[in-house]
Amino acid sequence: MDPAGKQKLAQSVQKYFLEFLQKFRLPLPEGGFDEDFYYIDQAKSMVREGKRTLYVKMSHLDQIPADEVSFDPSDFRLVVESKYMMVRDALNAAVPQLLEMLEGDENLKEEVRKARAQDELKFSAAFHDLPIYSGIRDLRTEKIQRLLSISGTVTRTTEVKPELLVGTYMCNQCNRKVGGVAQQFKVTHPAVCPTRNCGNRTSWKLLADDRTTRWGDWQRIRLQENEHEVPAGSMPRSIDVIVRDEQCERCKPGDKVMITGSLIVVPNVMTMMNPSELKQQVRRSLNTRSDNSYGSAEGVRGLRGLGNRDLTYKIAFYGTFIQEWGKDDGQNENVRSDDVVFLSQADKDNFEQIAQHANNSGKRTCLDVVAKCIAPAICGNIEVKKGILLMLIGGNSQKQTSEGIKLRGDINVCLLGDPATAKSALLKWTSTFLPRAVFASGKT
Image (cartoon, rainbow, N blue to C red; front, side, top):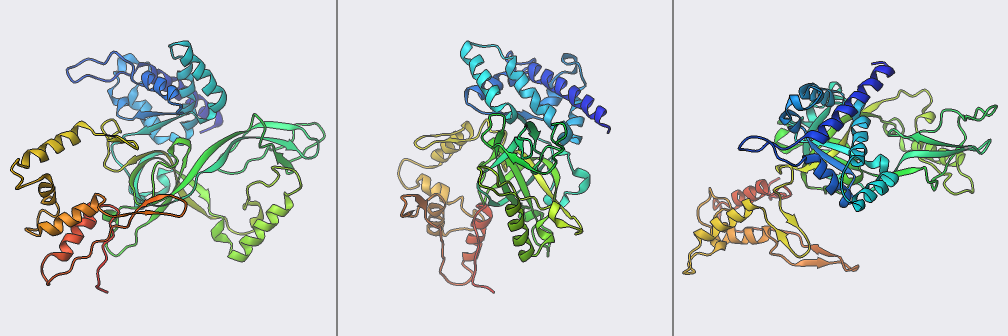
């Protein structure tokens, strides 16, 4: 698609998406629609809570009547799913436009003005609730830039790092400032100095403290495919997931998550150099751009120093929404704080059902009822099941480091007994029930 066509498509998507956010109302079970506008209320809550992400359910595009909007919702959804990375900036730009149209008291309007002045580039729209998801093993080049969901187990996360969103540079030859240089997954300098008779293309200095320079947060997550998706005799595959801003620190190693976003392609520079060449390249890159002024040492750029080596690429995943596997959109999940746990109605019903099975005579307690749910296919062994249950819910001592940090102790269960007494079966059931459990046996 030519640049003019891309710009026209982005403008249309931004216009229609803003119209959808303004007019969508939840359908009622008895018929009709709710009086409140769903995403307008969410936008007000977003501003009051200091958040910058608007969460949009894809199923809502199918629920809005076609006669209430000036576009076809099915066609709009098809464009968003098939050309997501192309129209992502237009979708994100509709969020601050929606905030500008909010009606409310002066405090809300003042918060909107401050948010737009400080974090205009951090506003984003995160889509979720896609009907199907793709396995990590099924990711191919035809899915690049499409909106899709993947699932897996988090194996590693990095610390949250700063990311340059829009840079302001100073020409080292004529000292002219050039701002508004957008960064796209790599260090991007101005193409040429706008000063007449200068023509500088390579010597630039980043003004990190300039008010027009915008920074954001990012984190890299290593996601491994689910164990039930690994073919027999194969090793599980993994993929790097890049998340930004509010999606950082949303998961930890061991969590099973569903991530919605888009497949991207990034240069694989590190694999083309052996360790000695990589150290020399990093040292050479830092020496050529270092001086005594603050902020002169920039990110290492490996593409220019590769010479005639063949450039290879690898796929990565740009995540915009992280959801715990098996959870819904978050409206009914439990909310935990330091002192109070608020339970959903479904959990309250489960607790009441357990209490009804326990009698007042004391012969059967709630612990007995819940313990029988451990490995229900195995009869008896009630004391062993109680021990496993207590270990699962935290029946062990806490550890405290020298810095005063409290850590939960390791959960270890060792069963001793005669052969064919369901020892391994009990532990295997525990390892399948608990996602982070690791089953270890003495067999080689």
